[in-house]
Length: 439
Image 1 (cartoon, rainbow, N blue to C red):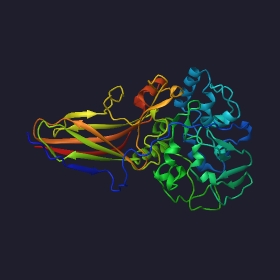
Image 2 (tube, rainbow, N blue to C red):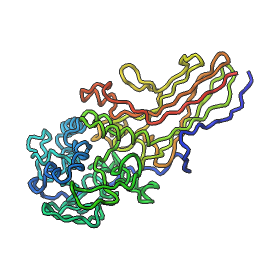
Image 3 (tube, helix red, strand yellow):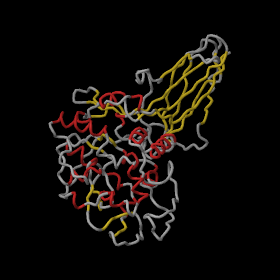
Image 4 (cartoon, rainbow, N blue to C red):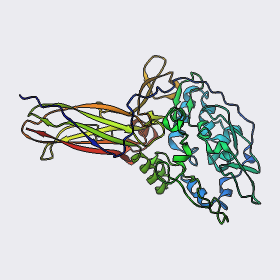
């Protein structure tokens, strides 16, 4: 059998390629963060429903966000209650400090059943919560300080005064550090970093160039989209060159669809589809029966943090590879979901997993004491995956299709929540195809 010359043809999924290679900077694995808890009552905050009368467009954008539903998110509620039960209540304040910040500060929760929560606290991460933050005292675990009252703080250097409230410029609101207090999750006992979105950004080229969270998540469309001219209040006399959107979309297509916000869900899907690019390395030619190894390169081209980020053990991101002959018959596949919605064992999966004290893998965050596996893609870097595929018995064409897929909830988590996995959309983040001649 004649051995084919191994010439790799890289099929570029994007015409714009940055330099860089896989691996990147190792994420931090341990920190300490003990935020100061203020004594504040929920009556010191304005309801978001009040804000809508002057900020109608911004209010409608906020309503569809993960912030607005942070106190009602079913994944959070199930996780909070099960963890509370498992820890005898030791985890209660840790979980609610970011998801129910007003209720936490006002000592309305625990109990985690929500029986003592005010209507204000149930609004989750509300308008007045964010616009009364005046300091961030550390990274993670709700390390913010509030100054509730008549003055609302924001990113405008020349805010227009009005009879409803006073407005003041806050440099903090223009910085990524503003988001760090909740988008860095640290185990309160072991110091293990459970989610490191802020530090991932901080250590990246985005952090060094000060391309902030707001630049991507508070502007229209994926990535940095400026300017965004408009007014910040209904009927405001001044049209500004740039205004900040408040839909704050990430990647949760499922939650936004389920909550009845299709426009937010569509933007989340756009974010996923703009996050990564695939490259495919194939041999130019094979002989009959000759198997080969294909090279799939996945580049984090559009996210200012790792892919995936956050609590990645609760979501799925994986590669699907399907090889067919010239008649369309499948000769090899990996990563194709089963009828039950399971990801096969031989699949290339991206994410983080944790180990408990015995060294066994656990998806119970409270038991986690160390990172067992961290297979993710840093910003503006890539990872190479190599997949073995069989050869064709006769001369012809071997067609190769690769897709990078994302699902907001894992099969296991969906079962625990009583959600049919069929309801959770699978988003194609990127796709690429190629052919190998068999002669």
